Length: 136
Image 1 (cartoon, one colour):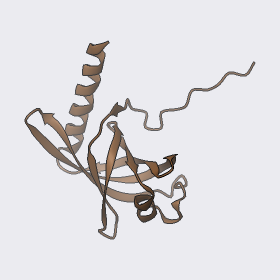
Image 2 (image 1 turned 30 degrees about the horizontal axis):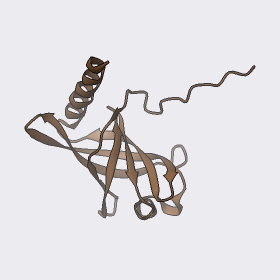
Image 3 (image 1 turned 90 degrees about the vertical axis):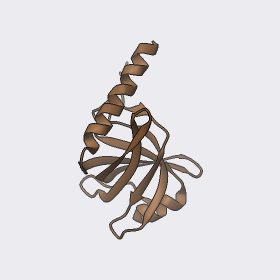
Image 4 (image 1 turned 60 degrees about the horizontal axis):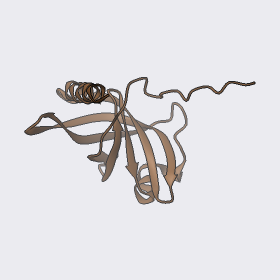
């Protein structure tokens, strides 16, 4: 009997489910707003509609390895309970998957954070992971 291999985690990091708005800026300066589906220290999965996919990905085809699509992302994380902080990160669209008739998931791998962005994401992901462990 053949064994089924587990699907690899493409980000090699633990992901946490998050629902918040994210602004994606294309190299030409055009911006779109989508929704974060999950977040890790190295990337973000974004949920968007067909119109956003058409604007972000020419031909609506998943990016081939090494031919990533450069974008800049902006989103907030609540590092302090009373004060969300803004995270700005350059990244690459590395994954496209259709999940419903008009819903797509885009995988964006972070390349470089502005200021303390990585620390904010790291702290937020760590906090959510710790909270989920304490619930079980």
